[in-house]
Image (cartoon, rainbow, N blue to C red; front, top):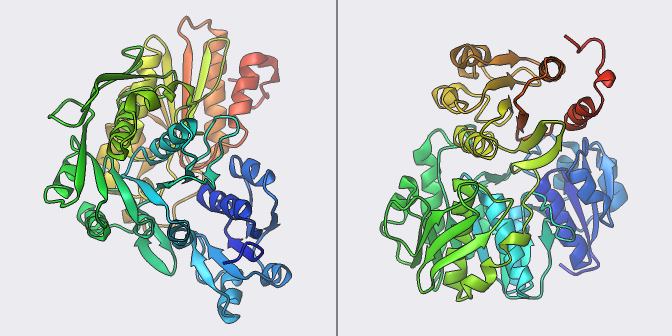
Length: 483
C-alpha cells in the first residue's frame, strides 16, 4: 500500500492496535480509528500520534474517513457496525498480525519473534532496546509500553531486523490462527509455555498444536532459541530440524546459556554463555528468576545472531522495564506500590515471590482482579489457591459479574475462603477495604512497611493516585472509607 493511503483501525484502544497505528503513521499513512473508551497507557500513546480517533463505533466514521484499508482488532465482533459497513462496501480488511506480516515481507526484514505464555513483552522490549542501543536500528512491535524516555512500543527502523511479540491468542474474528503464525520467524524464541486462554484452547494439547505448527512454518536458516527447563518447550523441540540455541534458567541441564544468579539475590544477572564464559547484566529493574530467564533468552538470541553478547548486555542497566510489569508506582511514608499485568497463576506466584524478596520485612498485600478469559473460569481454581502463599493479605475482586454459566465460573468467594482472603464483587468496595486497612495500620503505628501489589490484565484507573494521596495526607480520606 502506498504511503499516502488511508488506514482505519476498528478497536484502536488496545496496546497492540495502538502500536500498529503508530507504525502506520511512521510509514506515512493517514490514520483514523475508533473505540469505546481510551485509557492510559493507550490514551497517552495515541495523544502523541498524528491521527484522529472517533469515540464509539458508527458506520458514519468510515464514511467520513474514506479508508483505503481497514484493520480490525481481535476484540471486535461480527455485529460491529463499522465492520459490517466495511464488509458491505467490500473495503480491504486485515487484522494487525497479517498487516505486520506483510510489512516484514515488504521490508525484507529478519524477524525475531518472542513467544510463550510468560515474558513476551519484557523480552521483546529488551531485545529491541539492546539492538537499538548498539546502532542496529531494528523495527519493532511491543505489546506494552516501555518506560524509557523516547522509546515507544513501535518503530520503523532502517536496519535488518524486526522484533515482534508473538502472541498465541487468535488474530481476529475472521482468522482464528494465533498471531505468531503471520510473522515468518527468522529467530523464534520459545520461553515458558503453559496452558492459558481457556476461552479458545480447551487444554494444553490444543495450544501445543499451534506451537508445533509454527515450527513447521520456519524456513532455513531459521534459529530456534528454547528454554529447555520448561518441560513443554523441551517436548516441542525434541525433533526440531532447525538451528537450536538452548537456555537453562534454573541450571537443570547443560545449555548454551545458563543462569547462574540474579537480583535481588545478587547485584546483577550472571550467565554462563557459550563462547564467552561468564557474562553479567547489571539491572535495578529486571529482578527475580523469571526476568533472569528473559535476559538469558535475549543473550541466547544475540548469540544466534552473531552479536557480541557481552557488549550488548552492557546496555541492560539502562533498560527501565515496561508498564505494568512489576512497575514501581511510588514509595511514600512506609508504603510501596507496584502494579503488574499478572493474571495467570504462575505469574501471580512469581511476581509475589519477587516482591517479597525485595521487601522481606514488609507486609505484602496482594490485590488481584479476575478479568482474563482464563481467570474468570474455574479450570485453574486449585492453581490460584496456591499462588498467593507469599502474601500477608490477599484481596480478590471482579468488577462485573461473569456471563459464563454458573458451573464454569470461578467461584471467587470459595477461593477466598480456602486461602483466607477478602473477596469483593465490585471495585468501589474493594477500594474502600484496601484504603481503610492501610489507614488503620497507619493509625496504629505499624512498625512494618506496607507493600501493595495491584495485579490485573486491565487497569486500576486512579486508584494508585488515591493510595498515594492517602499516604501523603490522611485527612483527605473520605468519611465513608475511614474505619
